[in-house]
Amino acid sequence: MTKIATLLAASLFLLASPAWASLEISLAPAPANPAQPKMGDNLKFESVIANTDAASARGLVAWISLIQVDPGHEQPVDLEDWSAHKALAQGELAPGAKLSVEWPMRLIQAGDYRVVISAVQRGASRPVTSPLVDFHVERKAVVESQRILPVAFGMPALLAALALLRRRRRLRVR
Image (tube, rainbow, N blue to C red; front, side, top):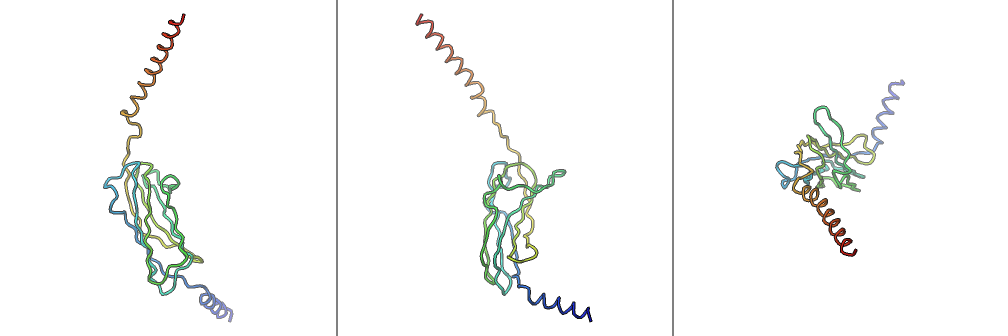
């Protein structure tokens, strides 16, 4: 009799638990992205979150995640420097409705990366994720000799010229 009571209790729990809408998430790089992105470039990723259920999705939160996948350096990446648009909150997504979101990202470090969009509804026990999108960031020289050499040689020359000019004025005054 206890097995029947347990089954009945589990069935009642499932019937009493709130229904969550079915979500699907697509993700793709924006068409305007550079073909071979370099450090310092800006990329955009476009996602569509679709409610494929007859029930509304309530308390929806979506976010972007970035993972570095360079061999020996596999790790999640903190988006504080990479992206200003980290999360989206939507009160309700009606049945059959779609939500298009653009996720901008500034490329900070060279390497191989994967990006994914995740979404969860209020009260849901697990998130829904998009397919992963891979991309590679080329290294870009941060220090350019064309910008550094004028300062490296110009400042000492300017200081030396000022020192000579000051010395000349002192000698004339005496």
